[in-house]
Amino acid sequence: MNIQLLTLDKETVVLNSLLKRDRPNLILFYNTYCLGCTGRAIPFAYELTKDFHELNLIVIHTNFGNQTFSKAEILDIFKSKNAPFDIFIDPQAKAYEHFDCEGTPHWVVLDKDIQRFRSIFGSQTHAKQRLFYALESLNQ
Figure 1 (cartoon, rainbow, N blue to C red):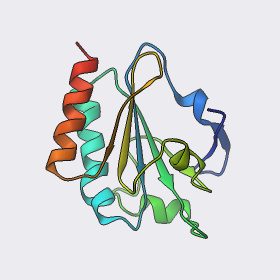
Figure 2: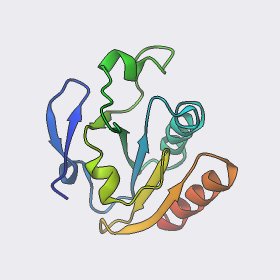
Figure 3: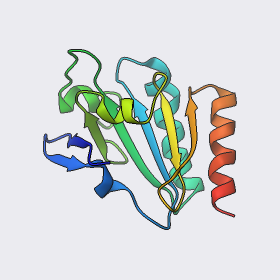
Figure 4: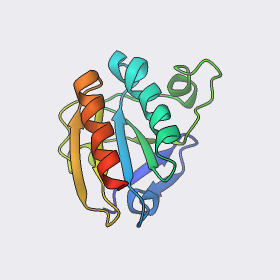
């Protein structure tokens, strides 16, 4: 997965370099225009980092079509204008397409061997429960 992402400061980073072996990896694909993402998924992702201390959370803002967002626009969803975790940008939605995402928010759980364990679309209760149970089963 040599898919290139950008930091909020426009530096290039390869997705592979963000993944960690021997830890569960959770990738959240979201978009600033998605209210389910900003209102439910982002806060839930933060909660998950408190519940699963070994979790490697990778939050990816996916741009669709000709969308571009500034660092300020992406951080505007946070009251403090700072994110509690790193956010990366998927400028041409390459990572999003690689993981066959269905929309935003979309969660991809990778096991400790960096293999896809679950792929979950949504931010409603059933999606949150499925995600929580998937992470819980990896921690056993």
